[in-house]
Amino acid sequence: IEGAQTRVEGYNFDARKHVVQYDDVINRQRETIYHERERIIRSKDLSPTILTMLEEEIRGLVMEHTAGDSPADWNRAGLKAHLATMVGALAPAAMTAVDEATDANALAETLIDAVAEAYEAKRRDLGEEATAVLERVVLLRVIDSLWVEHLTAVDDMRRGIGLRAYSQRDPLNEFKVEAYRMFDELKSTIRHDVSHTVFRVTVT
Image (cartoon, rainbow, N blue to C red):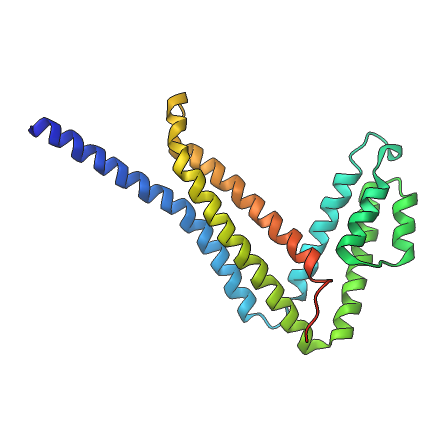
C-alpha cells in the first residue's frame, strides 16, 4: 500500500508540475498582450503603431503576390484586389506601379508610401481628437477579440497534446512549439485585422 501511495503521489506531483509549466507558457504570452494593451491605453499618439502595421501588411502582400520566378509570373490583379479591399482607393500612380514594377522591394516601398499618404489623409479628415479615439478603439477591440479566440484554441490544443506521448514525443515540448506558432499567427492576424479595419471605420 505504501508503495502504491508513493507512486500515486509521484504521479500527482508530476501532473501538477506539468500544469504549472503549461501555465508558464500561456502566462508569458499573456504578459506580452497585457503590456501591449497598457501601452495602447496610455499612448497619446498611436499613429506610429498603425503605420508600422500597415507597412508590415503591405510587405507581406507584396511578397505573397510576387512569389513567381519572374515578374511575368506575378499576381498583379490579386495584389490590386487586396489593396482595394484593405485601403479602398489608392493614388493612381500606386496602381500603375503594380502594373509596371519589375522589382518587388521597390514596389513594396512605393505602396507603403502610398498607403501612408492615404492614412494621413484619413487622419486629417477625421481630426486629431477623433483619430486618437478611432486608433485606440480599433487596436483594443481587435486585440481583445483575437486574444479570447487564441486562449480558446490553445486550451483545446492543450487537452489533446498528451496523445503525442504515444508517438514518443514530449507533450510539454510539443505544447511549447505549438503555442509559440499559434502566438505568431495571433500577432499576424492582429496586424491583418487592424490594417483592414482602420480604413473602413469612422467615429460618430
